[in-house]
Length: 100
Image (cartoon, rainbow, N blue to C red; front, side, top):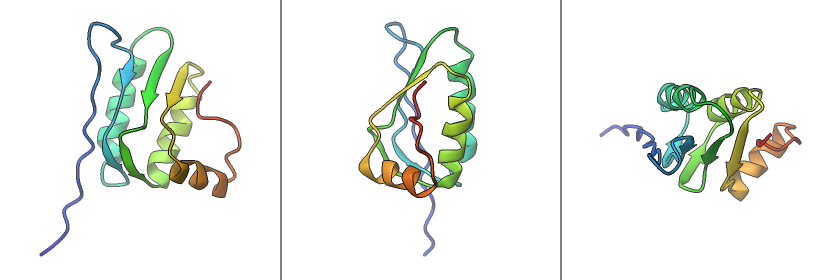
């Protein structure tokens, strides 16, 4: 039996704040394409956008690379950064916060 990677589920809170993305589950190389598309849709909105990572169980460098690229937009507020993610960021030498 083979392990099938889980697909990240992304939830956007419509109406109240359409500029909010809250992925759940894993965000690894297997889910990177879907996560990237979600980020592109998120940044299609004007103004500040928010990314809530509190529902994310696991990330890898592919996810971190996408988040760092999104940070370059200069209008992303990130919440719910787990200790595991912060440790990985520190190990990679990322000392600046994900939020702008």
